[in-house]
Length: 380
Image (cartoon, rainbow, N blue to C red):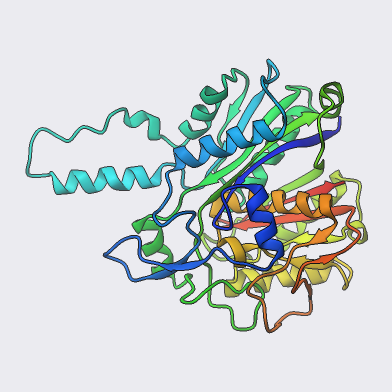
């Protein structure tokens, strides 16, 4: 059964919607700026949507509503599934609550936090289901930076196996919190000036916030609704390194396995891929491993770019943003640029400026902490 994408909702540091973000990306612009959202931490380059960190709940409501509007849905199918993931979920709320506990430790009784159950990790997906009144399957994947692709893959599988005809799927991330920033800084993973994926002088990742949510439908339902179609989800691959908490397996064995799994399920060969939306975090280890994997599996001329130099690294939402930008590349037949890239270190065909190109099939990859590997193939 074919699974089609009929609606997209997106918000990022590049813009408040897909219609704003895509032209800015194509123009080579970046939403990364120097910010100091927390006085106890030094200023850092960040991909903030506004001047202050966004709320997860607000981002979710916005992108879900945008996706439904874009798909022309005034009502959803009775069996509509909701699969919305996040690697951090309500961590920001928990940090605020923890801070209140310590600040008010001398004052009894304990401070009131309202219904703290609403901040459990899976409750964001539940809130999205409540928002649209969907009473079908609800899933809330958490797979580090592979969460976005994993969410879309799970939703596509529900449709392919006939468990539903329609799904709202994607990922949302509001990761700009003191603990997240301090943690990445302690690891030495944060850039000091900006994000430069695959560049010889890359400094590390730049955290960004954002979300992308899709309306997925069976081809039969999309035809029945006369829905516009962005593209088809062909197949996906999901593996784990079982190696280290934050370092990729040096030879990329499981990353290669995920891509091969994806291509096999999609009935594609490496030569059929016209564009790779790479994970491209601009960290030393990820870009090195991913470059090696691409060089090993794909023909030398395949176009490659990462959009994290524009949006920042939105962690669990990054794969979902990558799928959205990949679908726009298919729709407009334009290769998006790898903003921030200047001096090559690896023998890859990096897209340095947006250009027209014949694009039929696209591969989108995510490689998350804990060795979570995800790949998804899309077609016109």
